[in-house]
Length: 432
Image (cartoon, rainbow, N blue to C red):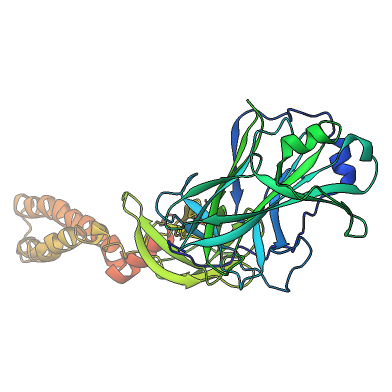
C-alpha cells in the first residue's frame, strides 16, 4: 500500500450507511455543529464520535449489494508523508465492496466539506453515496440516496470531496431497504437536490475505495462547515506500560527477583506479537542498558527474572511500531542490602603481653637478701630486711597485673564479639 503495513487494527463492523434516521431528524437545523476547526486523533479504527464520523462498508454497484468479506484494517506510517500525523489506515479488499468514511450531518447545505485523503498503489476505483432527507419526509423512514463513481490515479495522496459531486438519486425506505421513487436520472449535486425538494435537511456522506481490489490507504477525514471543520487523523494505538516486583523480603546481592509488567492500549485491543524490552541502570548512572526482550502474553502481561548485585533501577519499554505508539513504564528501584564483612580482631590483646613479660624476671632480684648471713649484728640484718620488702611487693604487683592479660579473649573470640554488636541489616527494599 505504498508504505509499511503490519498488524490488524481490529475488524470494522459491516456498515451500510448505518445511520439512524431518528438521529438525523434530531440534527435538523444544526447547520453549524458545535465544533470549531480542530483535529481529532483516532486510535486505529476507534472513532471517538461515531455518530458524526465512522467507517462504512457498502456495495459498489448498489448500496446494499455487498459481498461477505472479513475486513482487516491495517495501520502504518505513510505512505510517503501522511496528510495528517504520521500514520494512515489501509485496506486490501477482494473487490465488489467499498470501505471508507461515513459522515452524518445535520444540514447538507451547511456542510461544505466531507472528504478523505486517499493513496492507492495504482489506479483504483471507488464509490460515494450521499443521503438527503427532504423537509416533507421529516419523521419518516424515507431518504434520498445518490450514487457517484470514484477513481484515483494512485501513487500519491489525493483529496476526494463528496459535497460537490453530482449523484444519481433514488428515494429509499430505509426500514425495508427498498427503493420507493426513482430520481430524474440526471446527475445532480446535493445543493441542487435540496433546492428542488423543499430546502435544507439532514443527510449523510460516504466515500470508499476497494471496488476493484486495489490496495489503498486513507487519512485526514474531514467534515463540517465554515469555521467548524473537524479533521480525523488516523494514528496508531496509544499504549501504557506498567512494572512491578514480586518479592516479600529484603533483597540481598544475587537474589533472584521476578519483575512483571503489563502492556495496555487506549482502545483495549491487544497488540499482535508484541514484545517488550527490559532495561536497567545502576544507582549513580544515567545510562539505561538492555537486559532482555520478553514476549507479551495474550492478556498483555510479561515477566522476567533479575539478580541485582547493587541498587538498580529497572523499566519495561514498548518500542514504537506502525500499529501502536511506543511507551515506557515508570522506573522501579530494587534496593540491595550491603554484604556483611568480618571485622579484624580487637587490638586490646596486644598490650597484655608487656606487663606479664616485665615482672617475669623479678623473682631473681630478692635472691641477695635471702642469702644474707644470719648475724647478731643489727646493722647487717636491718638493711637487707628493708630492701626485701619493696622487692617482694613489686613482684606481687606485677603478677596481679598479668592476670587479666591471661583471661583476654583470643582473636577468634574477639571477632565473634564484634559481630554480635555490629549494626543490624536494613530491611528496606525497592520502590517505584
